[in-house]
Amino acid sequence: MSDMKNDREIISASLKKVGKWVEDNDYKAYDPADGLTSYLRPLTFGNLFLDRLLLQLVWRSPINLRLLLGVKPLDSFIGRGYMAWGYLTMLKITGNENYKHKAVSCLEWLKNNKAPGFVHYSWGKMFDFASRGGRQGKFEPITVWSSLIGQAFLDAYEIIGNEKYLEVADSICNWILEIPRNQTDSGLCLNYTPSGDGNCTIHNQSMLGAALLARTAKFNGNPEYLKVAKEAIKYTCTRQLPDGSWYYGEEPKYHWIDNFHTGYNLDALKCYVESTDDKTYEDNLKKGFNFFKNNFFESTGRPKYYHNRTYPIDSQCASQAIETLANFSGYDESSLELGLRVAKWTIENMQDRTGYFYFRQYPFVTLKVPMIHWAQATTYRALALLLSKLER
Image (cartoon, rainbow, N blue to C red; front, top):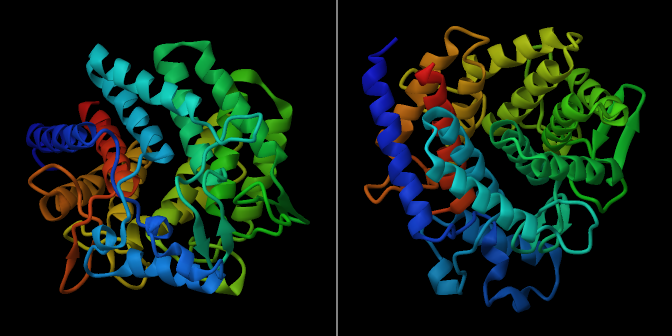
């Protein structure tokens, strides 16, 4: 293990810089998928292919086209959730009440800005979205973000002790129970959104929903939450590949294996096991984590995007890798050291001198566009969690 005191100083300094950047910018920045907020949107005439083309042009361009195309920095529901999560972790480490005030402010903002048209708490994107999977409307809630934000509310309940935060998590769980699901002979897959026919085969949002259901049930004992969570975990674990990996989704168009969605699956499965004491899928957890740590990182700590290809070097892969490795530090002896290597590589190579983290690196160009949730908020949470493990 490297010099622990020096490691803590490096992580702490980086945390302060990125936290200050986010707060100085009033929690607003760009998002990789914000291209449809451009003034060019009417020229797509509502055509899905043209919408996807415009969105991907802004997303993938080696230069930042947003200023030219009228795309403005926006707030972010998931960004606020991750910042609250990070603040709560820092509160737990330091006892500093300033972190409590910041966390409470973010959580209250989220409560006041839940998805319109839904009884229960849930959140989506600040913009329209178009992908090969179809469309998502502005503010339409999604299972991934709602479930992750729910984990922040559960942390608030545990750390601050206010029952209202558990009530929000419980409300999110009720929303999850109402979304369509793909019921099979070997488990169920929770839909990505509340719309559609329920034939979803994508794993990460279903696993994250299951994790929130299971952890909430640990506090309120809801048997329906446990039943649905177990079936969702069964769906994904029975479709784990022999080497321990998972495809992004079961349909052939989703047959890739990437870093951060694998991290989501692992964190969710670990949360389920720890919340329920159900040991059925412990071997799946072990195989999955071994695949993760052995296939997504170079010796320097640089995170790979795919299991068999490095580029693009993506800030979301870096932040989620740090979080997952920190999360598994009590489970695997090598995890904390690897997490430190990833964190220090990311700080040295992707953090701007002004404090924010770059979006992506390619072989000959770095996209230095300041995103809000994709790099800043997720990395703040990840580094705070890593620091908490180092403090132990």
